Amino acid sequence: MNAEFAPLFKLGRAERIQLVEDLWDSIAQEDAQSPVPDWKREELRRRKERYLQHPASGRTWEEVKQRARAQHD
Image 1 (cartoon, helix red, strand yellow):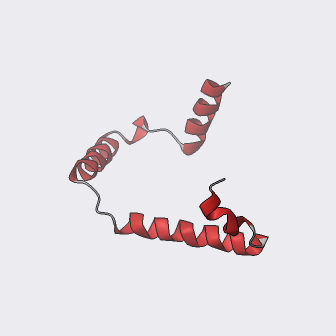
Image 2: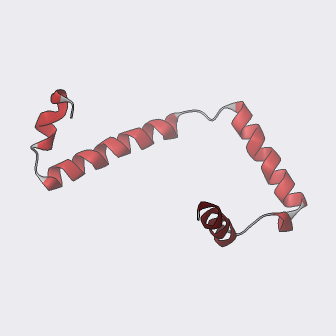
């Protein structure tokens, strides 16, 4: 444990949970304000176009989970 943060571990459970929520919210807010790079936008456009041309080529969320679990076992 970092000694600098030791006082935080002395907070009550509810206060520590609130601190984590506040930290997480601040990270999420930073991410929401970050611009999406052009390369990522282009990749999303490309994937959407591919899907629209071949909608049956995708997988359902259930299929994806089953495949991931099968590979993990």
